[in-house]
Amino acid sequence: MSGNQKSARIQEVESRFNELFGHPPTILVRAPGRVNLIGEHTDYNDGFVFPAAIEREVLMAASLRSDDEIRTYALNFNQPSNFSLKDIQPAQEGRERWSNYIRAMASILQSEQVPLRGINLAVLGDVPLGSGLSSSAAMLVAAGLAFTASTETTIDPVKRALLAQRAEREFVGVNVGIMDMFISALGQANHALLIDTRSLEFEAVPMPATGVSIVIADTNKKRGLVDSEYNQRRAQCEDAVTILKNVLPDIRALRDVSLEDFERFGSLLPEIVRKRARHVITEDVRTLESVEALKRGYITRFGILMNESHESLRNDYEVSCSELDSLVEAARSVDGVYGSRMTGAGFGGCTVSLVADEAVESFRETVPNLFKTATGLNAKITITTAAPGAERLL
Image (cartoon, rainbow, N blue to C red):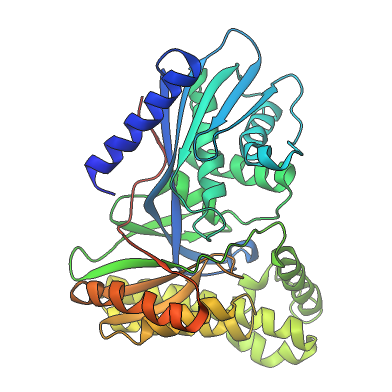
């Protein structure tokens, strides 16, 4: 997003806030979506991930109230949703369910004894919903930042990410890993983050300054984690650990199982569980190797590892779909594409490709046409750079 576009969106949320509440906002925060370059479905297995924050974001404008009411308004849907801090319940009404991420953060912050007060809140986002770019994490992180800003409370960004994860798990009901919230809260401009999801140690790794672009392609097939097989995959990984503990008693998660261990003992697992475990174990290896390749400037090798990741997600983890596979195939047909893979939980959503700068226009022209022919759907192409994480703007 260019500076002018960003200013226009900030102006829009401030102007609409003024129309809704009769005064300008006193708080303005943003939190970005994310794209995961490699390391998929490893975060809830204590493994390694390599995401970057993107220029798509959620903006929240707010002002203080003199009561305990939270008056929210989703500008994208023209939909209000109000609740009291004294009685935070999930919104059951279909049109108000977007507000559950805001309710979730308020509930979790209060459970941590973080002081809150009533606010007026207007929300404007351009992270596509259900696309695998973590609009939910951006909502949670932005809401947490808005609530704490209202009482001038300071929370460490890592803790903010952990609280957002708790909010989605305990209030929304999706057993998510930490990656999405972590990168939204701690992303760095022009860098991807290698995150150890067990220790929460992270390393900012520079993206190439020139020559390569991150290109996101949206299948426009929506998916939602609550209704997908995400929780089932997680349970299958836990089953693998339970069985392998009989021969590897020191393991805590699949992250602790080496390739050599898996080759020796993988036959102990039921076939479907073995396939799930094989993806996670090999994906951790690919993620660490890809980071080293990027540091050394081996972009071609990085792309090969992205391609291998997609094959594993399709064949072993079985979270791809025909639309994602078609989009990946179309991307790989373009000269100058180093690698392409699905990104996010799967079952629809987006792909991410690493593309030589001189091939970006060819990608933009060719891929949607091939995808339309194959699926009848219109793919949306977004060129992005690695963006900064969540911040207070006002």
